[in-house]
Length: 154
Image (cartoon, rainbow, N blue to C red; front, top):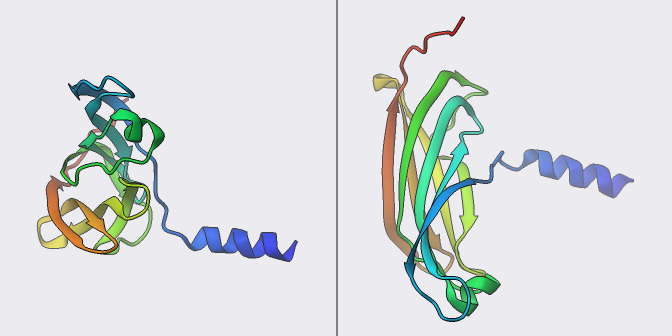
């Protein structure tokens, strides 16, 4: 029982990360065995900011290795975040706070999205980048959302 309580407490201290919902995909390279290489478009809502949705596009490696989850995906990704409702901060924002993470290889590479708040311009800035445990990767993309008043619907 004490272990379960400790595990629950540890899980509560982890950052609140979300999984992405696949919006669509396009096939880019035909593979005879296993799934084709493709570009996927995924969406996720910022877990710390109500009213913001981010869209990621990235390559997924197919073939036998890709079908088994053993392939290493390319580091390139594109991001576009949009205000989709009234913006409300669920808690105090921390610059560089991770809002999304996904494994892009079996062990060493991850793709992450972090958020910054440009208070002077009242703008949220999102950065997507890929890194490796052994060597960093400069591949990155950025998007910015000016926080605007959102009309309430009757």
